[in-house]
Amino acid sequence: MKNLKTAGVVGAMGLFLILNPGVFAWGNKVDSSHPATGTTVDGGYLFDEGKPPEQASPDHISVVLDNNDVYFPDAKPYIDSDSGRTLVPIRFVAQQMKAQVNWDDGTQQATINLNGKQIVLTVNSQQATVNGQGVGLDAAPTLKDGRTYVPLRFISEVLIDKTKLGGKNPIDWDPQYRVIRIHTK
Image (cartoon, rainbow, N blue to C red; front, side, top):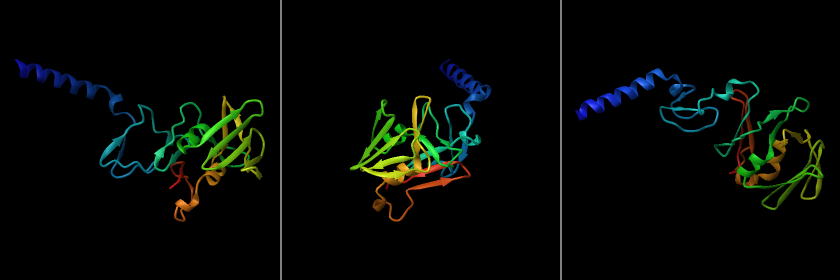
């Protein structure tokens, strides 16, 4: 009787798996490393919470910081059509870099601090300050849906200690998979 119950449970589970296409939806088979993120998986599948891979969208941009995906829960990076620069919601990237971000609503300024470096960016201004010195920007920070977007390359190149990179570029763009890789070490 016990074997009959076990067989029934196993059979029901198998039938559920076969008849439920969502169980296998959007899996990407990888043998050593996922090309978009560099995540290592041997002979397995990567799943994206039941959603299609976002690389399929020409508007999607992934950001990877030291081989860890940066998660943007409610605001996504985009390429500024005027400058061609990638703008990202600064809070999510800065938090993963262990930087402190402060927002002043009155002046519309974001201040980013990390390892004795300070960047002050003003929304819609192509002028920033780095440790009190004025610096020009290719793209002005923007405010969109309650999030402050800033030029990723500028932020990365200012905040990252390049002496720890051994000659490696602190930021790379993979146009095939639309992935920006940031290296801090």
